[in-house]
Image (cartoon, rainbow, N blue to C red; front, side, top):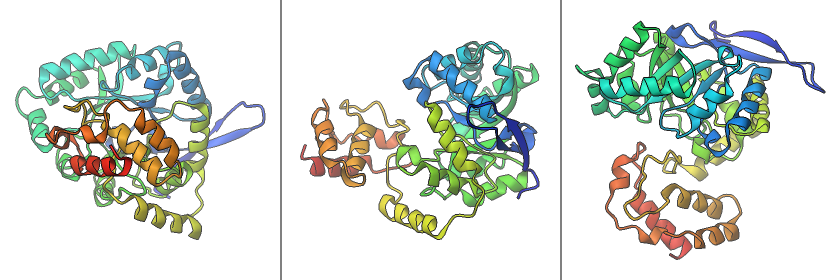
Amino acid sequence: MDQQVSIFFASVKQKDRESVHMEYTTLGKTGLRVSRMGFGGIPIQKVDAAVTRKLMERLVERGVNYIDTARGYTVSESFLGEALEGGLREKFVLATKSMARTRAEMERDIEISLRNLRTDYIDLYQVHNPSLAELEQVTAPGGALEALLAAKAAGKIGHIGVTAHMAGVFEKALTMDWVETVMFPYNIVETQGEALMQKCREQNVGFICMKPMAGGALEDARLAMRFIGRNENVSVVIPGMYDVREIDQNIEAIEDASPLTEAERAQLDVIRRELGTQFCRRCNYCQPCTAGIAISGIFVLEGYLNRYGLGDWAKQRYAAMGKKAGDCVGCGACEKRCPYQLPIRQMLARCKDEFGA
């Protein structure tokens, strides 16, 4: 096991359980001690602050101490801010991020995040999904980095990181000495970042694993989490969750330190063959569609049609959609915004043929 990794034991009072253990790591040069599994704050947009509070209480019980959210996740910061009042804030390493690229925009977003999260201090503030050109803008005079460094000096944020969807941005970030953490997709079907993850380890840059379920494309959450848990270059993985049962199930999977079985390895191969690499991660950066198509929603239904044995249900749901794949006007605006460079127009044309509209 990595020398950075140590095991701490968190006693948990539950009806039928005496205790569980949670593995903690040091998040690179930040020096922050974080649970190997964190909490991804996208899905709480589907619930409310009261449910979010219950989730936070469960995380504390289970020893999870890392929370990820973003300015772009609509009400996520606000729900978390309300849920963490009353003494819970101090129990978490709190991370958020902004797509601001200029100093003025980032100054504004940092203040909004502080208000939303109802705190005077954010542990990790990240530059959210820049392109290579935008990363240059961030670091240029008048760029967002100036605001981040000023906020750090003022004690408003503790550390600075970058999130990326493209390997080129990941690689570039590792050449910048102000980058303390990098967040990047890593899962059963997206392993293109493994060499750079090793560089993170060598350079003492914390690696935050996003999209462990490939944006919902992976059905077997336990296998997905066990796969990630075997890679010691992952500092913390942040599955999105909005149900207490998901928290418990994911923790049980990440805590299972046994080697992957032959059956599990065979299943990995099956998943990789079936899913490939050209699939929608539901990040929705492609939106809004010029023609009003819910692009990721159509691709989700295509998955149910072809992979999950729910063809009739998928066809019924597709038929009820206001805008269908056949309504695509071929403008290509979505493809320019897609961080995975997917051929969205071709994929929509395929869906049109499969669903018949």
